[in-house]
Amino acid sequence: MTGRSHARVATDRPHRYAKQFAAHLGRRINATWDEESGQGRLAFPKGTGTLAAIPGALLLTVESSAPNLAALEDVVGRHLVRFGLNDELVQWRREHTTAEAAQRRRADALEDAPLGQEHDHER
Picture 1 (cartoon, rainbow, N blue to C red):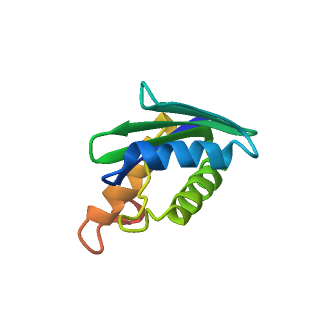
Picture 2 (cartoon, helix red, strand yellow):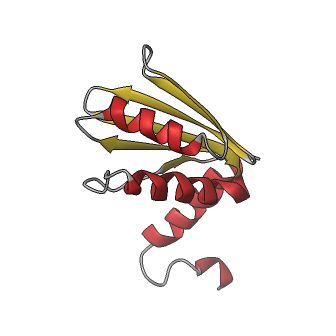
Picture 3 (tube, one colour):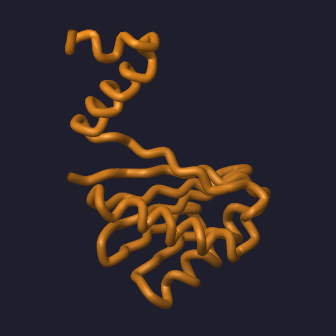
């Protein structure tokens, strides 16, 4: 099962950070950056990523199997902080698979139930 996660990092220099980031990661993985398009690709051993520089922000996406997604988020986030992007925390938003979404809806429904009613079916 594949998962995807997105982050938007506010910065007034998205192209500069993306170019540095791709060059830095390129020492260990296959990483490309196209200055003209403002887009880059990252090929990790257990997933992929994209970089996109837009006015006022650097957009990040990582994609991997569900068990490896958190590790990719961590690696990308830690490396970005090294480049001085700690003014805004990197906050990932995951796209949930159908099974994960159904499980989350069930958990949310239990949290929203009035006290004492979450186990009414056991009476």
